[in-house]
Image 1: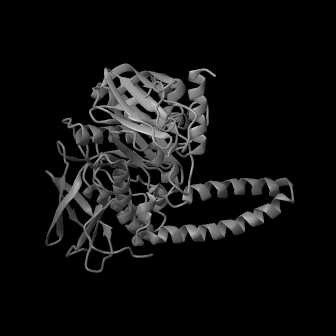
Image 2: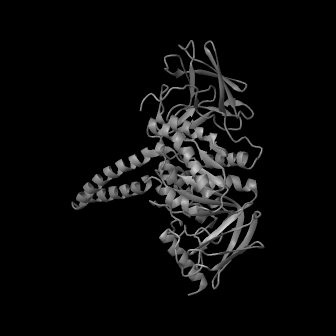
Image 3: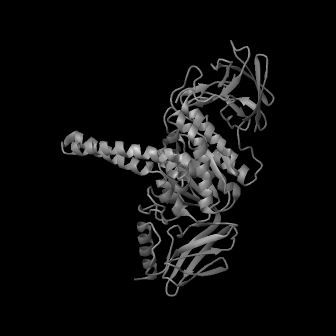
Amino acid sequence: MSRILRYVCLTAAVCRLGTWPMACAGLGLNGIFTDHMVLQRDMQVPVYGVADDGERVSVEIAGQKATTTAKAGAWLLHLGPLKAGGAHTLRVSGKQDTIVLSDVLVGDVWLCSGQSNMHRTLSRFENHKPEIPRAQYPDIRLLWVDVASAAEPRREFVIESHYKNAWRPCVPEMAQYFSAVGYFFGKYLQPELGIPLGLIQSTVGGTAARSWTPPEVLARTEFAYAHASWAGWQAAAHKKQERCKQDLLKGGEEAKAARKELERIEHLNQSRLPSGLYNAMIHPLQPFAIKGVVWYQGYSDAHNFQEGIRYRALFPAMITGWRQAWGQDDFPFLFVQLPGYGAKRDEPVDEPWAWTREAQQMALALPDTGMAAIIDAGERGAHPRNKEVVGQRLALVARGLVYGHDVVHAGPTFAGMQIEGRRATIRFENVGSGLVAKAVTVGTHDIPGDRLTGFALCGADRKFVWADATIREDTVILEANGIDRPVAVRYGWANFPLCNLFNTEGLPAVPFRTDPFEPAAQ
């Protein structure tokens, strides 16, 4: 067997096993190391794989050489910091075998993760299909982590399909299968940086944060509800499976529906397992060096008020857990705040999505976190079509927060309130060149730009009514009929709010509330 073929077979076997073997019949690299890959610049770079116990393994690239000894069938070494550029050749040598990877670039590696709105590919959106032929970015490289779930942390991610078995240059044939949000993030970031960019997609639709959270985090008492919820789901799913098995015996349409339901239950069994997606799709990427994470999730944690409240603690705990597991200090973690979803309301309401959005914003208390607000990009359905604006705003956050570019990367953000008589004056940060009422279309709803919408006031009775809003320099002045002594203000506070406050740079104001009231219903 040739050395190259031996390497391919060994790598595939290790990926199927999902664990580091304790004994090994030759030299191999972890499956994340392939031709066309991107290595993280300007930091120590872990390189790792398998080898016979006691075998000396050397790695060479860009004039560097590092050597280590395999123990218990595995090896790991660190290269010194590399400068952005390439292409390079990575050579791994053992006592008999040599593995050579070509077209290796050095730049910044970003992990793109979350649920369906990060998972859906460029080709899934009709409005983005004209972008596919233009997706020629040789300095952007793409890697897919296939969907999997595991009860225990794995060392290798799953590899199975024809375009997901290696890093690939960003060309139309590959870009069409990549996350639309991730692609646009790279498109708007890489040319501004002028360095290679690696994008890793690790996503699953319809998933809650608890499935992406490290098991040691979920072991904390405050997150016991995650395991209780899973146990309840399993019991209900078992009953459904038994009914479906009976329907399979009937044949015809009933059997067809039963097979479809069994497939759905199996998917949910995987996606709802506490820590299951982290174990199979995030932990195996460690300790591969990355620049940071872009994250789009939250739909599955916004079904009710209680979930939104719990997200306040769970989301930052998940972020911290990832960082601790990677051991790279506080790498940048950039995330998308939920857009609008569902039906518009004619009167101010208190709905769960507003609380989950607030919980997301609260995670900004962690260092090196950034948020892209897209309250203007939602639709009645769960999968808004405009993914370009999402990726573009994430790239802006990265440029401003991570790379120090002189750009406005956040929309107007609540900074304080003053009440005088019937008026409430709201101060904002991140006003850019100024505040504006913008004409926008949100879903199928046109909001004119001749007046501000989305603000509500309440008095001591806690009953919110729409407010008249006027921009005055960096503030908004609010009044409302029937409210003689305002107590609190809310803006964009609904599942699908119609609101149109922006800065002149085109970024929407972040929804907020000034009240201390807890949700009206559980």
